[in-house]
Image 1 (cartoon, helix red, strand yellow):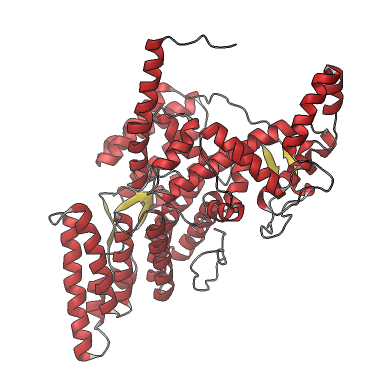
Image 2 (cartoon, rainbow, N blue to C red):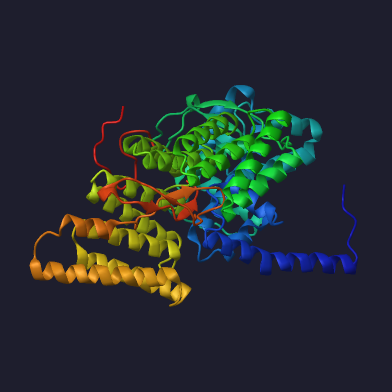
Length: 543
């Protein structure tokens, strides 16, 4: 039904609401993304964050323009726009495709998107065919129109890479008021093919065979890879208001440091959800994850690891093993195992988290950088200092790329690199990196901030050590090295919403037997071996 026209007063209110969205709400959400108060990993989390602030998905183009200084948000927005445009085109084409050719049509479409497929010989462009069909239908009547629609192969097999990209550009411009780049290869390199393939399959409802795809090939997907199509529909998720209120209050108390009250609220919420929603529910998994953090802050690491495992089991069953919350959970399990001195087991979990994050969002994301810092901390405790430096360098590169050179996370990477360099007795380089950290923090926080003063203290220590090395030109005493490494590398605690600082000091037994503080929090791959695109690691036998 056609909506009645708006009168002048209603039209004025609509324009005012739209102006408030574009001028106030969207910039405030982008600022939360920049400060990592919110850190979406994929399109679903980005959509949830927008809807929570009252922003419709049609404002993805405006969100992209507002996030000019936050590149990782721009990538998420652009990837989501392309995936949703692919959904519209595929849905239209699959309706006119015979059942025996659905797998072939889906594989051809994905090859056009990810590979290099020319337009089939003798076929006109899709736009020209669509125009001709409409004219023929008007002339010959409805019977001729229905007869033309009976096509076993369907219209999707008429696409080529170039014609598909032109149609995607038009669809994105129409739905989101955003102009995609005409350079397909540069866009695919920026959006990353594997995360884009995952997003498109989730939006359309395509299940692919789990295998290594040659994404550099012209036809990376075959018809045999398409296992099935399943409906993607909107539905309601059962939830209990009382349980949700207890869960929210428990998380707030945990953030405030009131662990005993948080423990009581979360256990009450868990009991309510078990009675109303059953054990296999997403909010039950949230309760287990929050309780794991309570036990972590209470230094009961065994229970923390156990509750986090329960949360991961539930999430893998109800959301799939490639859900962002599953990667979050594996990152936390790596931290808990490291605190229990199970370093090799921690590396298994952290590699799994890294694999999932690279599958979901690609390598250039703040959560990947935070994961690399945790990995470096574990390698330092295993005496793999050079490997730790490679991970720290990768984390620094990611933070500078996606957050900019003047960001607190970039300063944290410089400080962690300085600590690792000091352990290698490269004090001059350590002092240089710490000076860069101090300059960034001073510009952002001011001279009186405790973190700026702490950074200045480390500069003095590293500079004194550099002078001592220049004079003596020999190795440092073990006691001095232990003092330099004490309490400087901070493990990253993964939690929903982005990186935050924790208050409790946790004992982490490692290099020189020192204790370290858990200072930040955030969100979180292949088990064993090396990860494609990872900085590298020492060979560790994992059984």
